[in-house]
Length: 108
Image 1 (tube, rainbow, N blue to C red):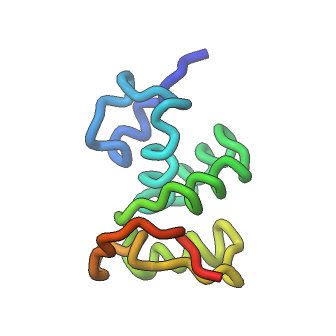
Image 2 (cartoon, helix red, strand yellow):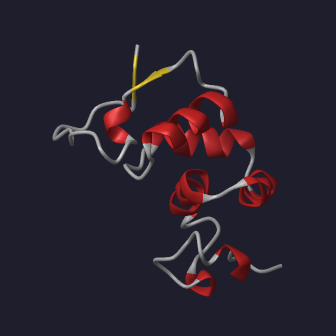
């Protein structure tokens, strides 16, 4: 079994050739890229390849500032069912000011 994503995901994992991406070592990149830029077929592959808990852990503990506001809300509230969790959107949403100090990705 190959330890890299299929070529069909190259358009969503554009910064590196899919043959050079390791499913475990690069899971943060893969998960965020597919959540932020993928669609139903890419999300299906993602949820088949990684457990829901792994995807949730990456999303919460390793935020990536690559999401558009509407995509962030969809991923957070619909795909990951985190609508009751108050996340710091500045860690995720592209067009928000950058936070200099590293804090938790969610507030209590």
